[in-house]
Amino acid sequence: MRLGTLTVTILCGLTQAAALAAPLHFCYEDAPQAPWTMPDGTGLNIELLKRVARLTGEEFIYHPRPWKRCQEETRTGHMDGMIGGADSPDRRNYSLPPLNPDGTANADKALYHDHASVYIRTGSGASWDGRDLINPRGVVAAQRGYYVADILQQRGQRVLDTVKSVEDGLRMVAAGMADVAVLQGRAAEDLVHNDPRFRDRIDLAKTPYVTLPLYLHISRKVYERDPKRIEAIWSAIPVVRATPEFRKMEAEARRED
Image 1 (cartoon, helix red, strand yellow):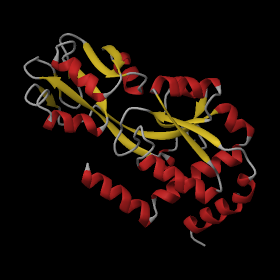
Image 2 (cartoon, rainbow, N blue to C red; image 1 turned 45 degrees about the horizontal axis):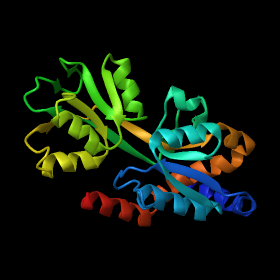
Image 3 (cartoon, rainbow, N blue to C red; image 1 turned 90 degrees about the vertical axis):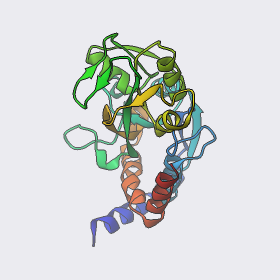
């Protein structure tokens, strides 16, 4: 029996038990993150988790939230988990991504990978070559609650993390509040290339600042209550991602993007 077939067999065997469990409530960012999640409850991550729910016999309920609030509600137990977060020391205090036996995050069970790109005000003297961020003013705009803001601070940058959306971040750069923004999400690239407010005023660096696997994080309390249930959910993610149906959806979304 192949590993994929064995995995599906095990997951299906857990379906009956999952049907008796309470639904799981997951939050996700209420700002557009095409093609992954959108405020109206669409996006590839939602489609992926709907298929995971069918495969495992689970019921998931989705809640759009400001990202900082989503994290806080997961920490306090108002939410069972959050969709699309990077692994970080702070989040490990109250939630877990899928793990390897050595305790590191298992990127094979990530929902997806995404990069944070560097946006530079034209003529500012700032630059990013893939290794060194030259930023004479030392101020960077980054999305509020994103792990990349922590990375920037660790590397000595002063972060303006009041950014609600990629558009907010680009506006800060265009207005001269910062010479650099490090923003996650493909919408920023589209705005820089096509929006007259930013085109010819902001340059997109060729190399991303960082590429991160992004996970379905589960509250530690929820995990500890029923580890087998949560492990089954995490194990179903790569199974669904490998299906021809989902691969086609992902390819079409990337082409549209």
